[in-house]
Amino acid sequence: MQKQNLRKIILTAVLAAAAVALSPLSIPVGASKCFPAQHLINILSGVFLGPWYALAQAFTASLCRNLMGTGTLLAFPGSMIGAFLCGLLFSKTRRLPLAYIGELFGTGVLGGIAAFFVASLVMNKEAAFFAYVPAFLISSLGGTVLAAALIPALRKAGVAQLFRADAQ
Image (cartoon, rainbow, N blue to C red; front, side, top):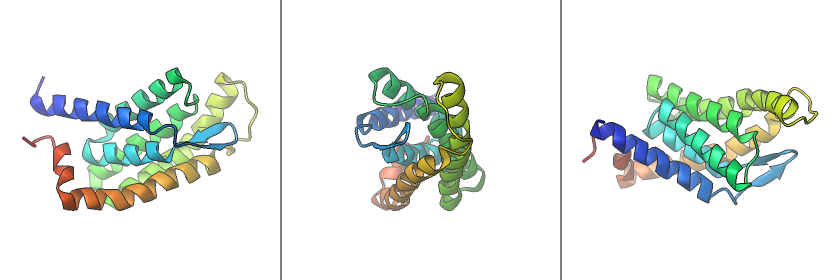
């Protein structure tokens, strides 16, 4: 395994662990739990590690939170779609605003719609088609605002260099 891949895998695991550790900071909204810290970490993963590592981080954090009883099955579609889209848009454009939009649209809209299917088909809960969109948008907006403040500060402090694949 190449050194850069191992570094990205380790950083993915650290970010997933941080998301799980911060999971008590949740806001219940209807049948879902909103985790602004998860969305902040989704953006950090997407921007600094790329779409596939961001997807892996979101899946791992969602799985751990569900196994620990601090999350719901709705965490999977919301966080995974948002993290992946954020990373994809940033990797293609290198523009932070598009990464933020990717997290907001991926989690808030696409993840909210996907959550409807998870809730109705897997969790046997009745909900309107767009029922989860407002809650997921609120949650991802909180994380996006945090990321918009934190990422420039990390870059300025040189901490963002730790995430680079070619860092020593």
